[in-house]
Amino acid sequence: MKILLVYPRYPDTFWSFRHALKFISKKASYPPLGLVTVAALLPRTWTRRLVDLNVDVLNNEDIGWADYIFISAMVLQGASVREIVRKVKALGKKIVAGGPLFTISPDGFPEIDHLVLHEAEATLPFFIEDLERGKGKPIYTSSEWPDITSSPVPQWDLLDMGKYAAMCIQYCRGCPFDCDFCNIALLNGKKPRTKTSTQVLAELEALYQKGWKDTVFFVDDNFIGKPRKLKEDLLPALIKWMQEKKYPFSFLTEASVNLADDEELMELMVRAGFYEVFVGIESPEEKSLSECHKVQNKHRDLMAAVKKMQRFGLQVSGGFIVGFDSDPPAIFQRQVNFIQQSGIVTAMVGLLNALRGTRLFERLQHEGRIVGETRGDNTDFSINFIPKMGYQQLVEGYRYIVTHIYSPRHFYRRLKTFLRNYRLPKKRGHSIQFFHIKAFFQSLWALGIRGKERFHYWKILLWTLFRRPRLFPLCVSLSIYGYHFRRVFEGYLQEIGKETGPESS
Image 1 (tube, rainbow, N blue to C red):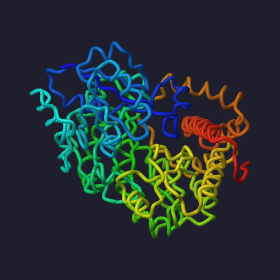
Image 2: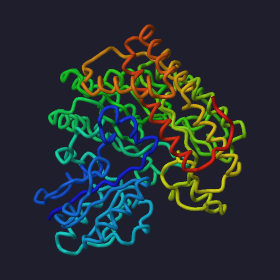
Image 3: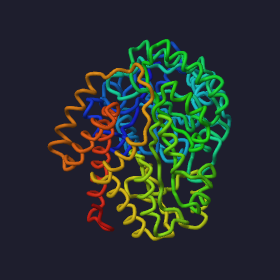
Image 4: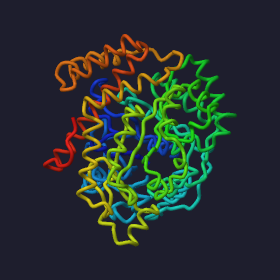
């Protein structure tokens, strides 16, 4: 059996980092971890190839070679999926699809021959068995949350690693919290399930043996879902492995804000090589946090939590949302104030959207307020429900936030706030590579000479060079991120036409 695994293209979004990747000559941030894991679950006698449309082109020869085309996708990749389906079907090939997009909306793609939904470890074996008997069914589902200690090492040899900025692995699935706008509980459950430390080290060893010596993203729904197990098992083993290998990797992940409550856990994470965490802050408005059941963020000083993580050596990137029913008119300025004062350089502020299957979607549908499907990108000024605030006021306020926090003046001021507070961990391995040097010189031209931010760029470079010289490479990297974010939002604003709302300086 010949299988072609196809990963759809992501549009240019906040998280694509497409404009920043050009500085380091990379084509995509991360590889399709789901598909290379699926590839490892297929029978050894089957031949497989992979085409990631974020780094390569899908041609007719690839499609013609295969017996089946496997597609995995997120909601955000829906437009690309439809293009792939049209192209594949025109050539008379059969399609097998899975992943969040299809699990959430299984009726949205009637042209697909076989849907293998939910987690592959639970449903893919049954499909393979039926397919080998020539009796594949249209749909495979499961209510089981599989034991992921049986999940294999991803098949990294299907990738051209040099085209990616980072690799990724997964330790934990599921999240103990149940925010009403989030679909993690639907896709992966509320009870965190973890791999063994032996599995994680085997995956890292496989990357190491392939020659990877850079960033690795733990793509967990919530890395600290089982903090005791982390502290007693994975992190000690990871620290030992990293020391033996002379720290070839640096890690980033996603965690809930209560990480700041556990100093031992933060210290172990930093010792293991973690340098960044994405945290869902969502809102400084307590009523909005109650509305969306963000219980882990309530009744705490969110600003102090962020700054504490920074002082422990963890860069905090943050997610923020506007559009809750409880949001007051002042929420836009409050969000700006929080982001600026906290020094969260990578601040993703999005409009609330209701994902199908979430409790938010069900409530709004019951109230007759759903007006369509979400596009999967909550930063593109689209919204799929009728907000209580009023659409025009909400969009104008949102425009104010993003044009303000990513204008050069305010972005570089926030970067300086972060650099002042951040404690850089003791230097370990992971030396500067040629593409880092290339990125620096490209930034001098793009940001320091040609860019409208050149005054602010040179000012922060000189300040960092004299005040926090060890943070100079980080300062350059984050400046390049800011350039990407500005380009993305400029593109969105051009698409929505004439700008409205408060002016930013």
